[in-house]
Image (cartoon, rainbow over all chains, first blue to last red; front, top):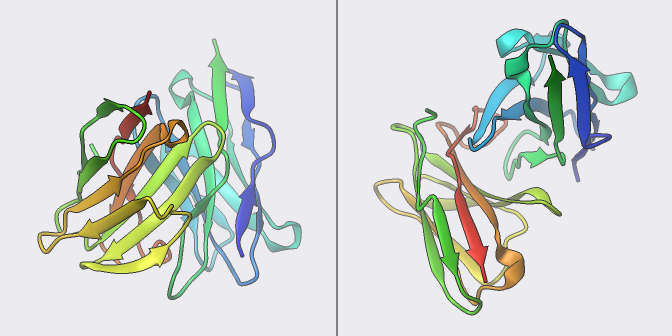
Length: 114
Length: 115
């Protein structure tokens, strides 16, 4: 079985501050890891993904995440928050091969204060 | 705009009723996925179809069923509705067989309210 844990349900930062959203995964096989963002009244959009290779993954809108196998983590960061980053962020895991399923965490709501 | 179209956007119905949600995937995408999003359960994977065939199954209730038609659009049928079925139902599509091989593109969802 595979799962992801996103601690906390809400993170608030000031505009210009560092954004750090935590994600830990559990998988019996090497995982593929994803971060999706959901803006209000919209569907989910892929921010970035890790499959194989470089453990530091860069995504859209200045976000990046680092796969740390020893810590079973895939935390999402952005050096400087912008008001437009306010949204809900979902970490997700999938395993490879037949019957691959994308399993989402519960999500974290990011608020950005002016 | 992800290119995935879901109808209806909003639906209000009564307990015991049956509804059908429709999804048109992006042009060229062969896989369709259905997810249920609720406050208490989060995003739950229901089922995936690839080129007309069921490929993966998640936490889909027996009262729910889905299919993918030859033109690749998909329908999710929800029957004997209960209050707890109230949720946002997302459809996603991808060009490949699974989430490990291709990015999922999500529609804006169908919000179902059961009264």
